[in-house]
Structure formats: C-alpha cells, structure tokens
Image (cartoon, rainbow, N blue to C red; front, side):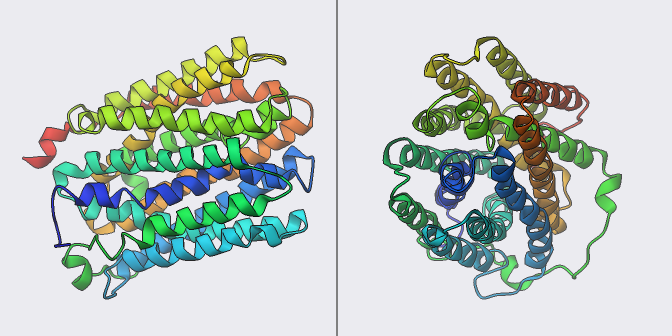
Amino acid sequence: MNYNIRRWNPILMSIPDIGIGIMWGSLGNVVAFFGYTFTNSAADIAKIYSVAAIVGVITQMIVGVLSDKTKHKWGKRSPWLFWGMLLAGVSVAAWPLAHSFMAFLILSGVTCTLVNVAQCTYYTMVMEVVDADQVGYANTLARTTATLGGLLIGALAGFMWDSAHPEHTFFVMAALMALSTILVVPLMVKERPENYTQTESFRFSLDFLTNKEVMKLFVITFLYFASGTATGQMATSIFAKTYGFSEHTIGRMGMFQSIASLTFGFTAFKLIDVFNRKYIFMFSALGLCLADLVLLFFLHKGASEWTLYIWTLAWGLFFIGGNICMYTVLSMVAPKAKLGEYMGLLNLFIALPQFLFSNIYGYIIDAGHATWVIPMAVLWYGLAFLLTMTMKLPHPKDLIK
C-alpha cells in the first residue's frame, strides 16, 4: 500500500495488538491453568506474573531507548515489532515441552520478554504512523483489537482448553500471535519517512521526574495495574481456587471482558478525540472503584457465575477507557523526540505493580486471607480517581490548532 493513507493506517496498525492482547489475556486463564498442572500454590503461579512484570520493567525501558536510536530499512520500530512477535509465537508453541513448573516459568518468561520487545515499539509506532488528530482514534482502535485478542484467548480457554492436551490451545495461540503482526508490518504499514533518517542520541535522563503531568500519569497507571492485577492475573487464584468457580467460567470471563471492551471501542472510538481525556480518565477510575465495591457484596462461594460475568462487563467497559487514556495522554505530555523512551517508562509503571502485587496477592491468598484482595483493589482505584481530578490537560481540539 502507499504510505500515509489517512483512512487505513489507524485501522491496519491496530491489528498487531490482537496478538499482544492474546498473550496478556492468557495470563489470567490458560497460563494459570497450565501452571496449576505443576503446582497448587497461588504464590507459585504469582511467580509467572512476577517474571512477566520484571522482564517488562527491564525490556521496555531498554527497547524504548534503543528504538529511538534504531536506523533500519524498515524504520525505527518495525524490526523490533516484527521479530518480537514472530519469535514470541514460536516460544508459545514450545510451552507444551515443559514438564515441570520451573521449565514452564522459564519458557513463559522468554515469551513475555519477546512480547515486551514488540509491545514497547508497537504502542510508540501507533502514535507515529497516524496524523496528530488521529492519535486518540488510533489508540482506541489498538486497545479495542487487544481486547479482541482477549476474546479469542477467552474462547480458547472457555471452550478448547484440555489439560490433557494443552498443545492444541498453545499452537492456535502461537499462530494468532505471530500472524497478526507479520502480515501487517512492514508489508502494509510503513513508518513515517523521518523514522528512516532521523534518530535520537543514545542517552537516558531523569527529566521526566520534573514533569508534573507525566508523573501524575505514571502514578495513576501504577494504581490502575495494582488494582487490575487482583482480578486479572490473579483471577484463577481468587475466583476458581478461593470461590469455587470452574476454569471454564474463568475463561469465559475473559470473553465477557473483551465484549465490553469491544463495545466501548466500537461506540467511542471517535468520541475519544472529542472529550477532554481528563474526564474520561476520571469516569473510568470511579467506575472501576464502584464496580469492585459492588462485587464485594455479591461474591461468595456458591454464587452464580453470572455474578462474575455481569461484573466483568462493567469492569471491562471502565478499564478499557482508562487504558486508552494512558497511551493517549502520554502523547500529549511527553516530549515528541523522546516518545519511545517515555513509552518505556509508562510500561515500567504498568509492569512494576504487576510484579509487586502479584506476589503480595499470592502470599495473601496462600495465607488464607483472599477476602482482603478485592478491598485493596477498591482502595487503589479510589486513589487513582482522586489523582485524575488534579490533572491539567489540554482539550483535544487545542492540539491541532
């Protein structure tokens, strides 16, 4: 295709996020399911999420800086995205070779590293290949297709998963992850011409610490994922192991979350560039806080699976709104020449709480205090809401004047 087709670049650039969404969605279902074939400890399963998070912290910061400096015939970001997702797919296909928890922990860690390599450059590229007034639209489409990936892995977990033959699920998962990227980048979507000729000097600074709005965004992001880890990655440990819901119910929760997110994406993809992102952020944080608070009153052993499905629909709607705002707000407050570096930093504040709180929640659950976890999530969302109220962001229309 010809470069810079305004209509198609945002749509085509959203497709690779299907594969990324499949990987991160799998942590709450098939990864945990397979992990529990080797152990019965929530703290052990939390180690998988810890490894995923810590490699995210390290990988994305390094790759963010390196990609700003990359000079390649495909551009700055495309080679990292292409090879990251292709090799990640290959590594997922190798998961059934694991015959111990430690082997699976290592293999899943390799996969998470490769996906993080791709993800950092992907989200930067999304904002670079579209025009300035399309950034919110492009991010909304990308996060919507990520939830489509979550829907696909939820379907695989809910209907295809067989603990006796995990290779069937993992092979399909691997193919979808790899193909969603290599069929699009760099074959159809090309980077802007300046990405082939201009690079940043190799350096890392702490100047982000003096940018108040950037730091507010990073802290809000940290709180979002501290909460999200409780009912996302720890879903199997909380809902299946503690409250007695089936593995298939947990898998279908992922489908309901994806349906909610797709609903938001298909109805609000244009509105995200109309309203002030501060108010969308506030509404999302408040909605997540209230959704988890309501869940506390209805969740108990023997509760209907529809308790989880209805909660998941509401939670998914609010979470995708906040998640889109994180990336869109970053493009508004970060220095344009250092977008890759700041994307790596944003992902540090996404990965770090997952590392910390997956371990904290795992030990709390194993200690017999699983009922403490969701109230903690309510608290973190409440703090995020209060912080969003202090943000000072320009209206989207002011960005194109």
